[in-house]
Image (cartoon, rainbow, N blue to C red; front, side, top):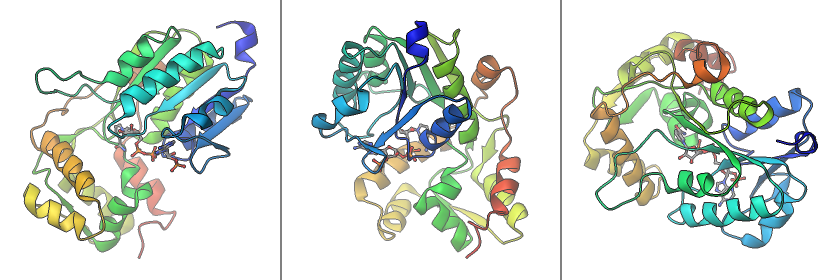
Length: 281
Ligand SMILES: NC(=O)c1ccc[n+]([C@@H]2O[C@H](COP(=O)([O-])OP(=O)(O)OC[C@H]3O[C@@H](n4cnc5c(N)ncnc54)[C@H](OP(=O)(O)O)[C@@H]3O)[C@@H](O)[C@H]2O)c1
């Protein structure tokens, strides 16, 4: 990065979301100029409308990228990363995923390739499930309010990560040298089953919250009955199937490598969140 670039605004896509919001605050705390861009953000940015891209990139020296989660995400990312570099962006930090296992012939994580091939310095953040899904996502939070977590995740384990940790790594990667070319696998410090997650939130809130493991078909009908689109319920079933299979039931060391400290524990998240009242009907 040139000295000039380090004084330029930092573009934060998904800046109204679980990680982007925290990335924007963390950058502001470091005195950096931030441009939050999303459909509802300060600067209107829509992955589906290329006319909104130029304005978001104007004068930016680096960017935090959160994809659209749509079927077109990879081609959008390819076109956007290319445009970003043409407009002078030198550093891209991509919120990605832990490595999927994909059917033969399909490409794994094509958004990573788009960013890697853009010509910018890149860093990938590859997190496990976010703890904050249970407080900042309406569907999951609704289950906590109901006192029953319903998932087709069996008794599988997942190393939930705090979104504050993801944001701290993103802020470091956006503002410091030494993170270029790193793919940080990010997890919390403990493997947790959904029954244990429910127990942690129950203890923190003093409420009764239980876990009901269901079949994928039962989950689909439960979720669509609560207004979740069928396609998204199907995606959740796939992700829960991976938890049930313990596919990502390993701890990662990305937080430690990037920040030189341990990640936050789910129990700390649960206690800090319980006092805000978001889990009380
Ligand atoms: N949640 C998890 O546990 C988890 C775990 C691993 C990886 N991830 C990945 O993290 C990313 C974020 O997922 P999330 O569920 O946590 O969502 P989120 O960050 O809470 O929300 C998504 C963000 O993207 C913006 N956005 C959505 N569609 C957009 C569009 N068409 N154009 C521009 N901006 C758009 C939204 O803002 P507006 O509504 O204002 O546009 C919002 O700021 C996804 O790639 C997901 O696969 C999530």
